[in-house]
Image (cartoon, rainbow, N blue to C red; front, side, top):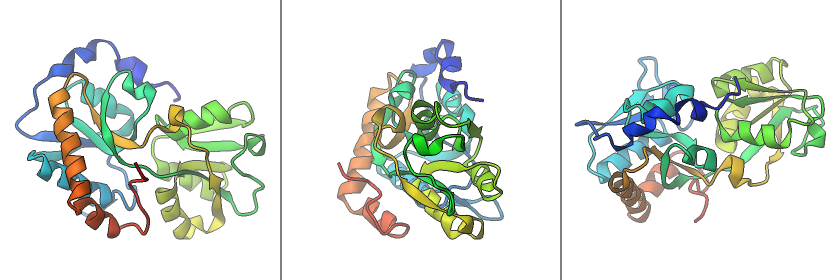
Length: 258
């Protein structure tokens, strides 16, 4: 469960790095709710902040994009195997992923927070995690952070395929702690199942695990395509499109500074 998805795909599929894009640019995303970034209606149509940002980036870059659902644990192999052309799904930029894929400049960044039952004497220190079961989504910066900083104290770091599964187990008392980004965590805390819990603090910034913000995942050796995506991100930041979209969803600067 904790095995990195990167090691499995780092070899032969790198030969796909120079693959020409299809007529449509296929944007990979994991089909799981992540409000307010990704919200699905009864017909499976997706809306949300990241959906709007994808549309804005594609429009600015003059790309004919289609969103392609891919399970999170298989999303990097899908990129390297040529099934999708880019990942735009709240993927943290970090050194481990850079070993096999490239990234655009960041397009947002938010703090990572610890949440637990209101009665729990837990904070962000390793000591407070003693004997606790910590829930994280697999193949994320939160999992890497927990394994680096809390593994020696916690009784278990339990990986989940989706963040929703981790929150369900937290609300049911099957785990003690969840580590997640503050935006998604706030959505959980505002829900009926989240009434059990509260934020226990913000984790210290750690680029080696939590990364340098969230960027578009790209194949290596596609410098021209990367430049096009970076130019589009910079342009929507400058022309007000980014802020206009963000103000519909957040009351703070989701970009997170320079």
